[in-house]
Every structure is written in structure tokens, then in C-alpha cells.
Amino acid sequence: MRKPEAERTRILLGGRALIVSLIAFGLCAGTSVANEDEEEQELLHNPGFEYPLIEPGFSLTKPEGWLAFSSVSGRDGFRMTTEVFHAGDQALHVASQDERNSFQGLTQEIPVEEDAVYEFSLYVHNDPAEPLSGTVRGQMSIEWKNARGEEIRRQWGPEWNRRLARHEWTQFSMTQRAPRDAVTAVFGITQFNEQRSRDGGAFYLDSVSVKRKR
Ligand SMILES: [Ca+2]
Image (cartoon, rainbow, N blue to C red; front, side, top):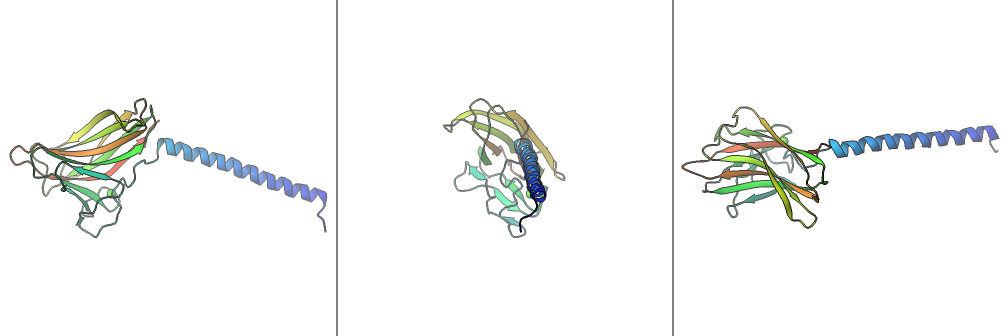
């Protein structure tokens, strides 16, 4: 039996109203997600060294999503750890290499938009068991690249050294505007050792972050 005309109309209107509501909700939700994407979303993969999961203690396993480099062939001082961390369950232990004028680092290259502003930040903690000494230091940097993969500009940020706190985490950050033609940026943390005399030591690194500000 056919429904009375008035009731069919109401059902149709109700359905349309629901669809309109859903579209409106979707648009609102979409807008809010887009804003978060542009302004607040974490852009790094595995920024807190939570992956892969390691056994309790220290591990030579490399953190997912990060590219490690070292001036000393086949050897670096990176170890994932569950012993000390700023957030989550894991962090990275960075020990200087016993080699004069050595350097090593971790980078992550991600897409960027020219003229957008990016905030790069991290937390570091001097290793009380083997604190940084002498010339050993860590430093943040951003390398902007164009569509051909060529470096447009490299900007060095804050650095930390033997004066870094041994019993608390210290945050460092740098905020920079992507230059014209930039399509990707390499966000890096480098540890340098000039090794005059007996320089050495290590620090913990955790909660690295890159966010687009505007
Ligand atoms: Ca962590």
C-alpha cells in the first residue's frame, strides 16, 4: 500500500535534511581537520622514537623514519633506549664518537610549502653517566631544497654542549620561513666532536617536532 503523499514528502524532506546536516557536519569537520593539518599537526614520522619497540634497556636498532649519518664509516653512536625518555616509553641516546673532527646526525626530509613558517623543536638531556665534555656539542638545522633536490639554504639553530642540564630535559627550538621554491626540508640533529684532548660524552634526545605555524 502506498504511503499518503504528505507522509512521503515528510520522509523525503527528513532524508534531505539529514543529508544537508551530514554535509554541513562534514564541511565543518573537514575545515577543522584542514586547519589542524596546516597549523598544528605533527609533520615528523616517529618524532618520539617510539618505533620500533625495543626490549628494555638499550638497542642498536635504528628509529623508524629517520636517516642516520656518520663521518666515521660504518659506526655511529645512536642507540634507542627505554631507560630515559621525555615522553612515551623510548628515546634516543647519542654518544660522541672517539674520533677527532667527527660528526654524526639524524635527519628527516618532509614536504614543505614555500613561504610557510615551520617550528622545529626537540628535548635533550645530558647523560649523567657520561656527560658531554670539551668541544662535543649537538645542534639543530634545517636544509631547504627545491624541486630538483638542490639545497637552497641551510639554517643552523640552537646548540647544546657540556653545560647542558644533567638532571632535567631542556627544550630547544627554531622557527623559520620556507624560502621561495622550497618543496622539501631536511630537519636534522647533528652531534660534533672536534676532540681536542679527551672530549666525549653523550646526550638523550626525545620529543622532536616539526609543525607548520601559518
Ligand atoms: Ca619518546
